[in-house]
Image 1 (cartoon, rainbow, N blue to C red):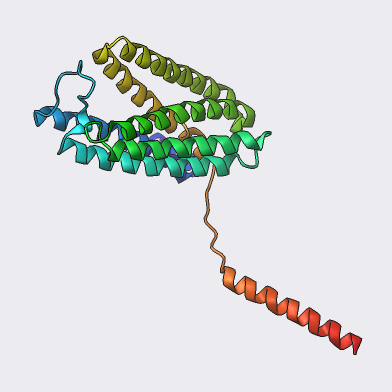
Image 2 (cartoon, rainbow, N blue to C red):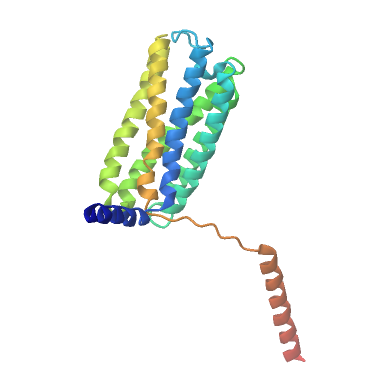
Length: 251
């Protein structure tokens, strides 16, 4: 009994050492993965899921599945953007080349924006905007993954950079291979295997974002609110006092 109590106490102490922010990437991964499969199940059960060998047949293209798909992807895009900003803040003081961190933030933000286009413009309604969103999501998503893999080695947070970096390199390679394979299959009009490849690509991409929880558990993020108007007034008053003092000395 005493052994179990000590084990539970040690576990609680270890958990206190970790930041609660580590759960944000995990929530994104779990929520988005479950949400997308729920969309697929709804489409199948509703009879709106047609054959996978047709290019214009996707799970989130017809209501009610499309409504759930839009909601899931919009929320996922918001979480990706928040994670991107937090990751940028975490690495800001650690990176040797700041432009890499900035470019990673821009790439991940554009990928997030692409997700909203995919969510709100179904393939059957506006295929041009939908394909643009897909290109932004995965095009800039790949760039962000490779940069984050590189930054993992450079920053080496808590000496975990090598292990985590190797994992992210493998995931980035898998994502890149899936993208290339998808376009090859589509070019060969093998849409059924292309659709399967796209699902694998999405799952790996979602899991990659979830790996950021490894570093997030070591960081605390705080928001500071400053009343800018009072500061401006204070500066104006100080400037007026200095000028008045100067004029008095001159007199």
